[in-house]
Image 1 (cartoon, rainbow, N blue to C red):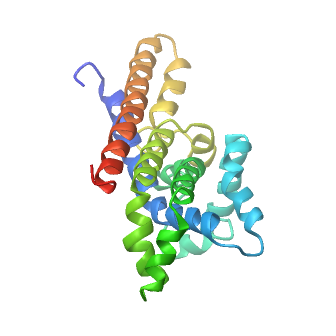
Image 2: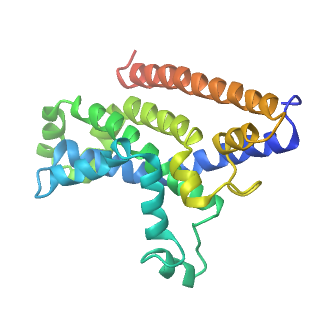
Length: 230
């Protein structure tokens, strides 16, 4: 990475940090949501499904503005969090929140498809042996859905790395604080002579995206082989 300048390298480090925490914080909720949509029947299930996939349909700027209204220092949630010392707006943590929200539908969809592929009879067999629903999930469902979880997490990481619209709306474009790779590319393209730096970050983005897709395939196959006993 010696060919990257200090400002460019700072954007790469921040993007990796934001994407990591976006996935790490949302993965437990993603697994729970995917399981609920795949296995449970409850009032409002279709509404929940619509809300989960809403970030894929709405313009990212709209999602970012909704986050700002909700988690801003004057928002209904943000004001409460601000009083206890937690602030999202115009902070890197807000960038992680925005990236996590935008990547959440991809994660949930991959995990949900993996759960739906598990034979329900296997789960029922575990229940007939006296195992609790939670234990059946841990010992039967979760191991068999690991390929989908791995794939969903890595795809979400790649999506979080490239998130721009919601992030710049919610946390702006502050160097060293909220300027991720997409924001830095945008900033470099606004100044004369910034095309070279922008191109370097474009190449980094492409490399990270391709590596994430390749890693997703490799890890998913390895986990599937291990679960299948191959």
